Length: 438
Image (cartoon, rainbow, N blue to C red; front, top):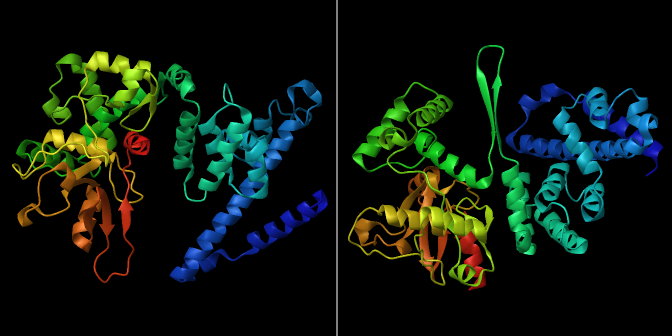
């Protein structure tokens, strides 16, 4: 399509969309509403793609070596981003994204221009894979092509995490450098505001974030839909939090302020539910023995072996033994409730809520008996599975069931519902790697 044809198509589409009656939305049926939402998303994606390609072309015509003769400079703007903000009304962040994506070349650039991937997906893949470094460019292109295929089933956030995982798989030797770069980017700034308040801007590397997230979850999870508690003291604390007239954000602020005030003498029963925050890192015995491999923080972030050894030195090591099916340990039928050790083992094995598509972390899950204890079910790890409260309640209320066959767990739909079941996959990247290696 020539430039005049493209401009004609843009004007035509703009006229049709701007002239469409907005009053029709409340009158649509559910089926039509769903189709209209999908059509709007496709239209928005097409517009975003052309906006990025246009931004990229503006950037090419405004190259630094062109000086004051560059496109943006001749229009009276110092940078391409300033030009885009003034001309299109986008935010500085969106302008920067459009320039980044519009300048992509190779596999990602081709996928963007053809409409194979949308702007957010292309930017997520770019950010997750990073720059070639010691990795051959053709290997990075192959990874990008693979991720473009996966982009149809992953939202941009998950796609970026998947891209980072793939980069770590292809470039294990560079894990330490990337980890060092993330740690070097950490920062905390206090911003005094005119109204007398102070804002904290805190950017955390994965290891630091694991500690802070653990504190935050324990301080607020009962309010935010975390697990139900059976211990009377824990249940009483959860009830207090639920009835507290402070917002969840205010609770978190007060908890962190008190932690800083009390420092090492903090009464954890008051704020954190009785357990110290900790970083748990999973690593295979072979990696520690041979010195080849990497570890994975429980939240899914990759860390280099030197980091694993440092954490082990500082905090000790609790051995967790996995068999070929990913099972952790078996404590028999003695107790009705899963012990703290068992719940920790479940969190390691399952990596969070096992319900398909759920991304709730281990700290938000409950241990579910796949066979009721009253019916002879055992309080063993093999008969337990991690579910967040929402999906735990849904399983019981709607009549779903979970069974174990050949060491794998299957979600079975309610009888006669016509719904489809699924095999449940662990959300723990470390366990997935262990199973794949075995």
